[in-house]
Image (cartoon, rainbow, N blue to C red):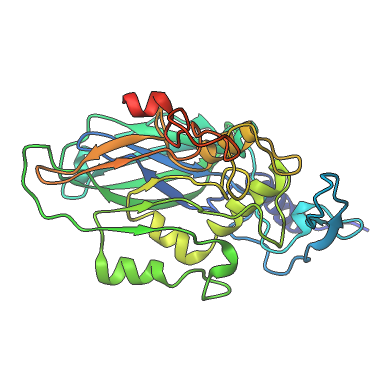
Length: 335
């Protein structure tokens, strides 16, 4: 049978589009904003949104090897399935990202960066530091995605405002959230309704997420591996309410125990196959973050905020109480 040339052309175009497909299914995050800089985080995905028709995890009981009679649970895929087959999965993909940004009131002052690759070893994410920004200024930005060396396949827009200089008095409004795992969402498809409420009513200059962004040690799935921990991040930050909020407002991210490895964790602990070092690395790959997770930010003349690290330097809970037992650790206390 002879296939008409027009059919071959249509098939060729379809295959080319499929091979070049790269999306911003997790949108972007704007972090560590001060009066002259910001960090933009993003992740490239195979699909524009998560898989709402996927399969559910199967829960199983893990034999107790501690001798303390503690019941432990794990999660596995249905037979013949992979992570990509699971409900709300959003696989990453290789590709390159380019950013353009400009002051909102001066689009002629656009700054355009070179294409940079996302890192497959870091869950197909990248972080771009913007410098030499004007203080107390609204910026708009655009991120573009493509396969390596290919044509631009998708884009996402964002906006943020830089902090006033430390000697400038200015009104400031900010919000603080914590403990918002996937199963606490009050809109099953769109996410947590607090996000559009904050965006519409409060319009904060910035937000602080004070930790327990996700719960590895909660079900569906019990994230006892690096793969499942990343899955939980990808899932919650693909919710439409989250995607829309985080592209518009700067956020300072802190972590706690459940988004490091598990409840009440201290250095050296693990959760199944998820090690302490992996937990620390996953947090830093999934949020815009500078050199240290403890830091301070000045927002104009009248506000300074200190964000402390409550997990990385703490003494074991089992350590006897005394002057050497610490939550912050010597390095952080000296700072």
